[in-house]
Amino acid sequence: MNVLLVDDEAELVSTLAERLTLRGIDACWATSCEEALRCLETTAFDIAVLDVKMPKVDGLELKKCLQEKSPGMKFIFVTGHGSTQDFETGVSEVGRDYYLVKPLNIETLIAKLKEALQR
Amino acid sequence: MNTDAGMIGQAGLQFFGRMCTSISHDIKNVLAVVNENAGLLEDLCAMADRGKPIDLSRLKRLAADVKAQVRRGDGIVSGMNRFAHSVDSTLVRLDLVEVMELLKTLSLRFASMQGFAFRLTRPQDSATVTTAPFLLLHLLWLCLEQAIAAAGPGRTVELTAEKGVDGASLRFGRLEGLGNAPAASFPTEMASRLCRALNAEVRVDVQANEILVNIADLRE
Picture 1 (cartoon, rainbow over the protein chains, first blue to last red):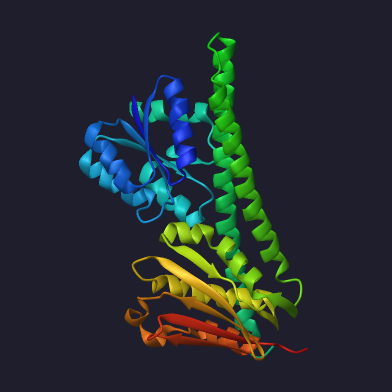
Picture 2: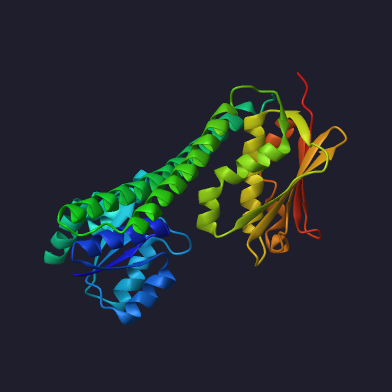
């Protein structure tokens, strides 16, 4: 599977990508909407893991941008400690099962990636 | 305090809550990075168990990354601690340089989300004022929000502390977009209430591209 990870915390997302790669999963990472769209120019991703709160373009908007370019792409949202409203908005977009809270457990993330792709 | 006390108290609690959620989000991110670094260490150890040699330089980089995150987390928590203690006393002699630095720490996430930077200018003579710390932070935060909305293309807000005749002042400068903001919208009603409680004055100077906050000493 090809995974796109997007979070404005560069160290978090690069390390996560490295860990997924060690487990045989192709993972690219980006820290902004612009970078994510550039990644999409060279790679077809099956699924994207998006941080909800990001500067300029947040995860919800980024999901729409990515969906326009790649309609079949699946999504998982990741959040720090959002408000109840943030939680409800995120869940309405991807479903409760695909809305994960930081810090992440990599095995849970991989299980969710596989599950989302089989939906 | 005056008849504005009730309104100031309610808005102050909301301000306190906003700062707490922002700080907790920052801390969550630090923990998330440390968690991934620790996870990668585990991955590398597991690979070594299976016979693949560990790249020592990678381990050193990981250790340095964890230390950097600990420093980052320490800065955030120290700022939170100073902020929480701002409600301890209603009248304290404050050094405005320390206030500026605390404001900078508290606004880290806000700054990152809005894509702007702070530049602090320290005064030659110590700029101190006797005032109510929490109310002052609340007023300065309202000014900061307005300053960010009016920041120019450089997305930098310059904060300057100065000694005054009867107190001190803080200047939010380089606000090239100040002329575009609705002139009547600031100071807001809440900022005006806080000014009255603090014996302070907020002046918006479109020509100078700045918001000036004059803070007079409060007396018992």
